[in-house]
Length: 560
Image (cartoon, rainbow, N blue to C red; front, side, top):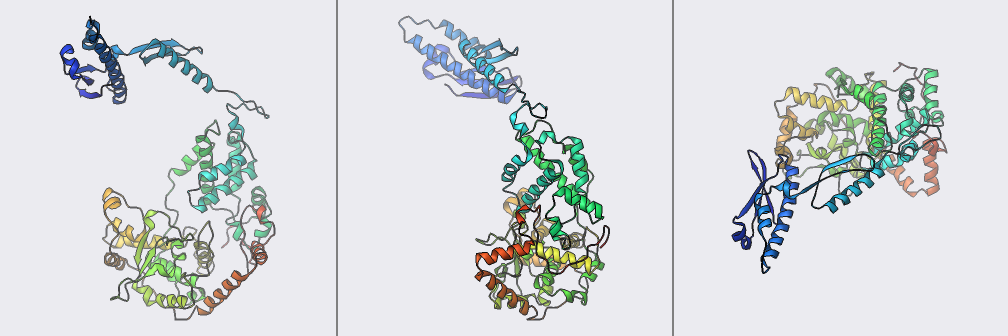
């Protein structure tokens, strides 16, 4: 087949075909140029290819005739010279058995037309909607529409396997909520009134039931429906509006998955609800601390109650770096480096995933960065603390923190800080949490420095935009980062200073405990795990329970 060349002219798209040298004396032209009758480039490319195929066939016929003793080439030359592209392509029209009409079908021969129409008829018959009767009388087009939610959840979780483990755990949890509260039904059977009841019920679920030391063992034996009724009847603290919206969004994602896989025929029952709740909702779910907050948090007398390394240092590091909670909690000693032999203060935090370390994670690719160690942290004795940790043979900065697949090492740090913030500091605003240190750092950098936002992002690990930033520019040098860091104003408050050896007794106890755990038999480890869970039937719990030390009094709804 000769290669077609597509040309654009003011009158439309044309096809140009090169005439072979041996046929030029008979045709009298070097090229054949014909209108394709279309301005659509995709359609024109297809027409040009078919035209070239037809021209190639005519070239072969012409050569065959020229090889004859008495060649008859007039009809072939007339067709080559006068016919346009569409004249050389047959257009068929046929009515299918189901009444549908196929027209404008481009083929070369009548036999090809009938073959194509036969295949189209078979395809239409196979794709015709079929009604599958069900036990409850609801008609379904496909059998797959009748499969209940519990059978779809494993495939949905497998679909999410590239997401953060914490996100996957939330997705599984909200699907269990749906089944517990509304029953295990096919996705199409969750009518709007059923979903309304689901939303009304989850508003009475308690916040973090696995962390409620007074009720968690009793709640662990309840379904989500029973749990909501218990909270409602006793007037206990309910889930926040943000948590409820998060549950709804998670469930909407599951229904979208089912719709995309054709596991349901109707639209998602939560689609309009999620779209409505997202409009006008502020993206910012956390507020920064202000100067008065920080004065209270780091009050020299009050802060002395922070008697553990992972309660003392992470808030200070977050204040002076803007790093995320888990980024701080997962640090190893070799993540804090000084690669300058001439400057003993040239230390950096390396926010990264170390080689072969499966217990470290980053939020996104921009999170991989270095942050200069603020001189104030050095003044507060952070390097002395690192020496204490290193002298006992630990490799992690906060060795007593326990890792979980869902939250890494940061869960304990965040929880203990929240308890301190609400209980002792008396800051009860739910929008102020550990992450508020990061908001404070970013707000200060934006309002009180004249640096470019993309340069500040090199410190904070936020996403960068533009080809220059994403493709060509690399991370800022240490000197530039330190210059920016020192421009960011920090609160003028008295901060607690670490004295060398302060946490050594606790670190030694941690080392002994880890050695004992390493030597324990599998049976002892299993018993300890059951003790931490507080029950021997952990596999039946709707949530995971952690160990408690002292019972606390439950506050009624609206309390601190």
